[in-house]
Image (cartoon, rainbow, N blue to C red; front, side, top):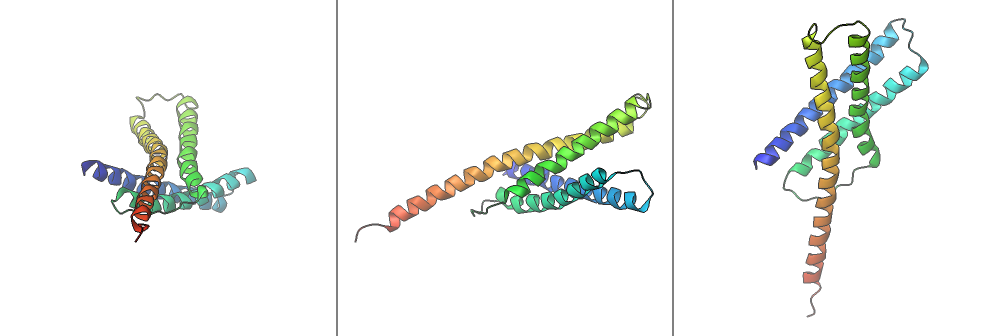
Length: 164
């Protein structure tokens, strides 16, 4: 019972994190068009892919939320949703790495000088890693659920096919 509550809470925070990250990507995308920036076509393509992946990732996490309940149903999730659920935290990890390198090494700042920025980076890093790990655990959970449902259906068929 407690394990399920913790898993549902983590899933809820991952959904909220993905919504915030996707909103941030949309903000950057719109902001870069409104200003006269030096962003290239490749940057716009990456942001567009990240935004679409963010929307797909949100929908993936909402669809898979039901797998934490006891209700047994077989629901197929398209591979693109799985890929999107891994692209978004991966992209955020890339952005965090670039931010960390550019800020702390580019400005010669120390972590002690900007502890709040460092803590913010650690929080985002934590949620990105948890999101990636949760996708892999969800994949195993869904595989196990589908195997159990197939086994239960086979057992039901054996009971229904008795000779009269």
